[in-house]
Image 1 (cartoon, rainbow over the protein chains, first blue to last red):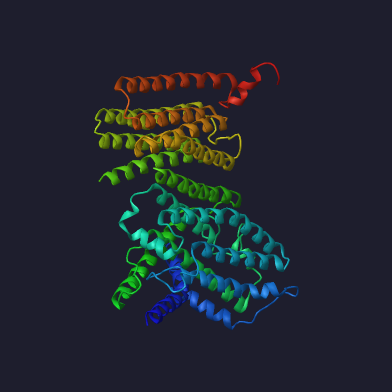
Image 2: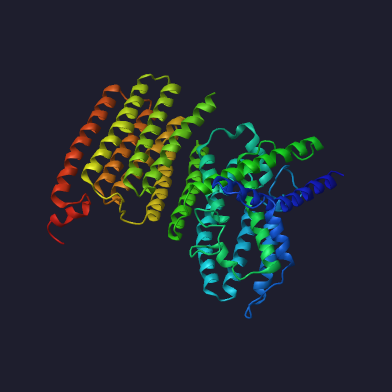
Length: 318
Length: 220
């Protein structure tokens, strides 16, 4: 019986992330438009875009191989699995013993690998540029992410996300400079991974410095819809990851009643709203960097991650 | 309570190492000065906290001197010198910024590896602060050798002094006379360095110390 309940909770979380991911994207766009004193598209616009794209026919290049055709589904599936592993409103997911934080990083990494392959597959110059830039970002962002994971798991004594977030809620966390550093590093990595503004511009197709959009330029129809959904899901995943590791207050513990779940859900939505607002303010306030500065930006994230792990070693050695 | 005291001390000392890295990351002159003011501010916070938990009121004076002299007077004075010299505002590094940061990480690892074993008998606070202060000193030295510009070398020198203050407070404080004389010697150093900067500038039209090398004689 308990197992069925846990499975239900897991399934509810899966449905939740799937259904509100486009809403989050629409919300961030809306806030950004308001900050620029524009009206902006309605919050539900991403859903309409997805529906419309699904109904359109797919236009394939003549020299597109099977890699190009399966990539959207692989990207979507791996991102969805990774998102299902992150606790949103309750800990103790059924899937979480099977996979930990390192597995989440690996899933996102394989999604990125296939996207870069698809960018190269058609043979257009834009796709190649996008893929090479994406790989440059990945070569710095993934080690930084792993250093953050190591820091947190050294502290919590486990790489399981549920354990980490339970530990972070507990009293023995204390005031640690390592946690602050890894939070900043994680935010920098999240900005780079989701192609947000200082690194890439999510709102345009027509810029020579674009990265993510350059890789998916050749996609159309339902393939594009699936990729867009995966991108929205990835943004939501990073929000959930940050909130469950660094602001885990209000997460329901598995086995509590329905009331706790409802409360956890409300708090989760509130966290998303606050996070999305902060992202929009940040994106409006900063200017986009040149591509060659991105390595400095991510190098700083990697440095912060390394330093966080090392300082932790000092306070542990004591 | 004791636990919280340690955590806060750890926070400030670790923050100082972080600000040392931010000094290495800066590539603008005024940004560097602001960072240095922050560095001195974090040192004074750290020393004041040590004064609080070690019940050593004379350390408050050390903190005050660090705050007034190094977080306010020296940055303002250097700011004026830079404006009057009219030097251009970007900093040239010897290697790239990325390589410098990697070297810095290596130095932090080195100081932790060296300091933790040899201070095994001391208290937790002393060990942490000694390790961090050695890291800050080494990072200051790295800054001095990796920058071509005389002003940023001065900043590196001053950040070494901040590291020394952290080490001194960790070792149960230092006598007030020593602290005051160190503060005065820092101010005198600033004055000498200021005059020196103007002399270099007059003679070579640049504060890039590279220009000095052709006067060394011997090989070109």
